[in-house]
Image 1 (cartoon, rainbow, N blue to C red):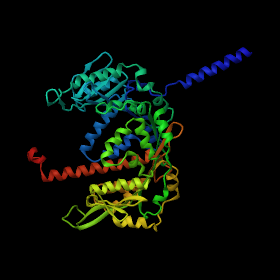
Image 2: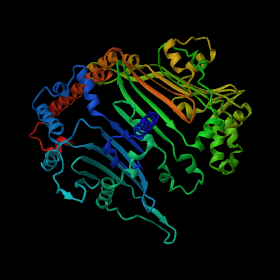
Image 3: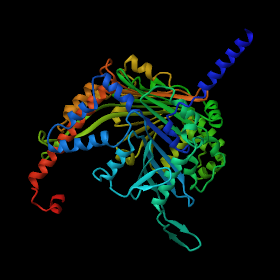
Length: 576
């Protein structure tokens, strides 16, 4: 009996091990190179299910968009041909990924690729060879796949299960040959050869060389969602290869950091959650120089009740010194700054580590009467708004030293103990004022003075304050009220879409926490007015209305052009 019990325990443990080792990443991600900087994954099947649960089908959406005339019918057929006759398996995820690397001559190569699954390869070949929707070039064959070039930097390749569409860029830049004392323009790369080599690599690589073998990437798919994002800093070193100054410890900071994020369409909101995992070197710096949380008192006395957006951030300025030390360039930077008589420590030490930005009263203002701009108005309008950015001062002596240097350069004026922006800054449309407590950049002097008086009381809901409170960074944007401020003055063909958007979307907000337990968590949330309906259904209705408006505007423009330039007029005259 005891022996049987031991066997049962071992069997359970073994099964648990198998489950924990299960690779959660979709099978097709073995085609994505592990050197990819970023991967975006969308699950069309999950999106389709949520739409169907909300009583919406893709056919009904397309039917509303394409419902007017013969041009609509033709374009509808093109869309339907791609959906139904291109051989794609729309029940499987679609992936978009980016690879960046340096060529042997240290020029930059960027490869952007879309990866999808196939249900019928023969349909895809027929779709491509028809020439109606793609370039009808020759289909070429390799050992593991077939392919066709769609242009000098575009390639479509497929096997019996998967298809990739590659967009290839290899930037060639002139360089100066010191021996020949002249600039040399390198030969143009053989794009066909290079693209084919990348396709061969993707289709032939082992799983251990793919993103599917990356632990953080696989772990991300344990969470059920409609979309995923994975990015890593592992392969950023290639982007720094052309920098003359080599940083020996840069790899220690970049290697092993990655961010995994999920996108979910829930009732009343679209929510993206992300977690950034750091390596030991970067984690030690973030832990040592841990920052405070945002200072809400900086926005308490903003002089307006019509706030459109808020952005707050809090950090420990000493982290800049920690990074310079880790990179072993602090002495070099200070030597470079010696001419300005300001050290790097004085520069970042002049900051307290708080930043607050508030934007309000966005809308359209009247200017003097102009010639008729549109069908409804004889008055020209321009966008207006108010803004305050407050950056509290850290070390006062260091701050004065930095500002006095700016005074000497002519970009700042000093009046008594107050610093103000010069004519150059005012020309750019900003008002600057600073003292030993804070540096303020505002939209105008009146808003700045009202803010400094500290007598106004900003009306921010408790819900918004709770969202902003206790975070390392946080932002809030009131979408509905911002649209409403512009909509009353809108005379464009998108008026109906703007009204729909105002009644559909409520606000956007996001925040990130301080570094803790080796990671940084963040969240971004787009909230809808209808809290009970699934957000994908809500958003699809909005985008459908926008698409209908866009087609109607385009149709009116074509009709107007046809009236002005009848079809009998030569095309060259019509185009000009």
